[in-house]
Length: 180
Image 1 (cartoon, rainbow, N blue to C red):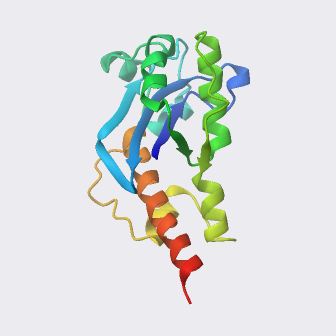
Image 2 (image 1 turned 180 degrees about the horizontal axis):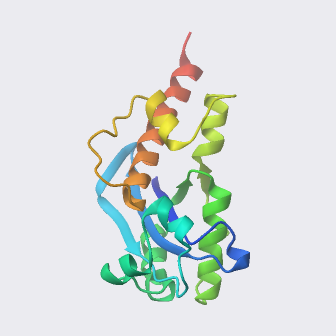
């Protein structure tokens, strides 16, 4: 089974108000192993301004996007769909990311992904570690996933961290289920 871990950065928190994706990163997991050579990473031209308060969070603004060859989602959407085809999708806070992705696909006139299986690592973390902080940083700390070597956090780097957390949590769940 092929899993694809996806992370996005956006212009805000409400696609229904016109917020758009500015970056998408994805990495495959096959047979329990993260496939560092099987990735998808694109900067996306939202065709609107990126509010300064949002840009300060993820470091992406219109000038950055222009300098990094960002293209509208409609131009990269088919590539994205080809990359995720036949996979189970993995997100940290799936509802948020899926809402944006589905909105972008609809706006671009591309097929929806409603029938694709989805795993939410945030829900998984809440089950594994109830009543604890379960953002990616907290999970990395708890699962002893080193991030000290990371110089910058882009969507692909975050997708890779989510993948590492997912694999570690899957092992934790399996160990709990089969311990005597």
